[in-house]
Length: 124
Image (cartoon, rainbow, N blue to C red; front, top):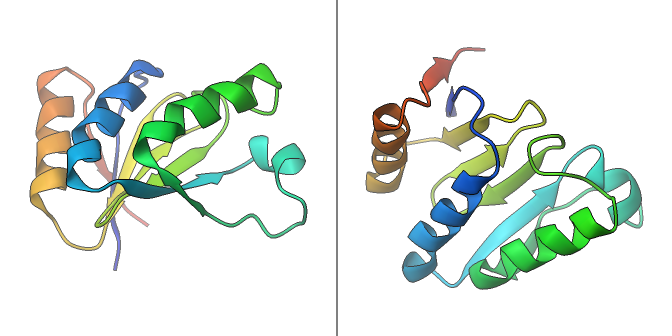
């Protein structure tokens, strides 16, 4: 069973922090572009996550934004790390999704709480 928390609106700056935080922990992550990115980005109706170097994520996102395929905070983008997913939601908030609490999930939730992002558990 997945556990999911979401925050208040926080904008795009947190993406850089999260990528920097996870970069020393592993060189790769997976990225998946939801609506509206996916409509133009993917060649078929099957939108699948792709493996990418963590250091290349911002470059890729900025390139797609410059091509008007999507926009962080306006269109969904999910980055999957080893034991959790971070969703940059179309509502401008963040979601963290994991099956078991970890040092990383606790760290991010505590950070968001201390910064006033008000993480709240989402129930199905």
